Image (cartoon, rainbow, N blue to C red; front, side):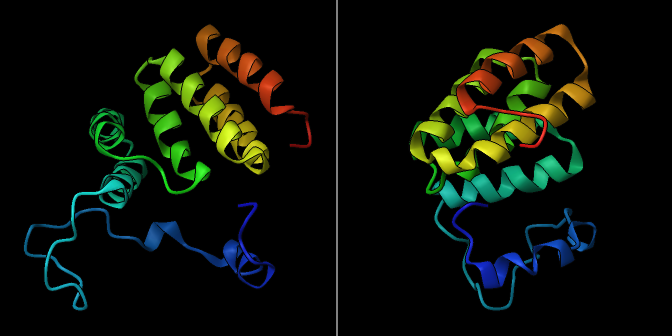
Length: 146
């Protein structure tokens, strides 16, 4: 993440996403949050990120549709989960559009966008994935190293 302080960036490799519980009922609330937070951008983003971890791409897209209709990302990198979701659901033009919006909001996310599209090509492997990656890659300046 381009805006992450160096002191925090050093700890990123230690994160263990596999330890996050992605299932929880309505009765599962963090102890410091007695009430459910407002359904603003963060609400949709966090739920979409959990859905991404489960591979529930239809849920990611549904949350994206609702979140983008009501609010907007606070950071350019918050579009990445939705780029993946829309791509996995075959909505390539929307995935490309979100990629360009992320680059416009903060050009420093170029490596993150490039990595996301490279992963999509590996996971999906379709002509549409490769064509989208090529178009976004030109806009982001993707190289073998980025």
